[in-house]
Image 1: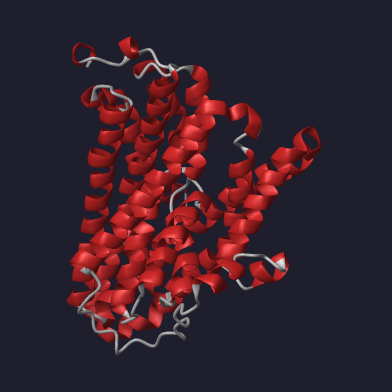
Image 2 (image 1 turned 135 degrees about the vertical axis):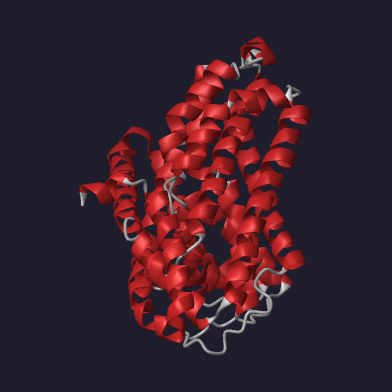
Length: 411
């Protein structure tokens, strides 16, 4: 047992992925008999959705601090988080529409559950549907938009209550930490779930499904690299007006740790050190923006949620309208905000987005096997974004010592 846990989780997941594909190819359709193990894993993931997003969102909003004291730093950081998040999710939608990684997979042999009805509501219905008339019912139905609105209102209410709201804030902060720990427990089941699901996919659907998953992984990396190399580089060069190469040299340690751990939270101390010491950002701006970004700035996850939703829609033949695309863009951004900065959090947020636009939740079983490989790159994107926004805001507010940015001679 000690030997098992001594192996990093990502290595166990990769090993289970390879073993599952081999077993599935040799076992054939009979490999579907062990799919129940993967179904149990997916069931635990669905269990986490409501409490994780509720506690994380409330704690994330409350972590902003006093709204009146944020001033120029706060609104600039939040604006960059929101705009970059929207660009990221539309990038994912664009890649999914252009390349269509899920097209051509024959799923006729699958016994899947009922497909959620497609979203055919008007924009007026959508606005009314965002009002959480009964928060308890909203949570029971896993109705994502009113759940997010309710969480945001609770977080704002805590901010407005000031000292009197601190006891409630501690409850949500503790709840967020507890839910992250529970999520980590569930993530320990990932190797077993991945093995069963990949054996099922390889044995039942064959090479076509594996090729589609390969396209999804490739598009995930392409999308993340575009965000890092184009969007973040443009932010540093044209808004912050700082050297792009020096910026990336300055955060190389954070990039290495984030890719290996797939956790924004685990990388947070390293990110803070890089932003302060290597990029010359003041302690106040670095602490505020990077800490807040680790909670709500998840551009890699937002991009992936858009891409994965189209992947599922293409596999199961679900037609999505422009209204669905708009809904995905909103839920992808907000769902990324609610995603905890720990491995596998993006997988949990899928259930929220899929259900809203009528994509079968069986899609989660498809992508669970390769999610860890993609999660490593998404986390690197998220962490790089935290550093980029902190540096840009510091440059705009005069809270940076550009002379301290690491130079080529220091490397």
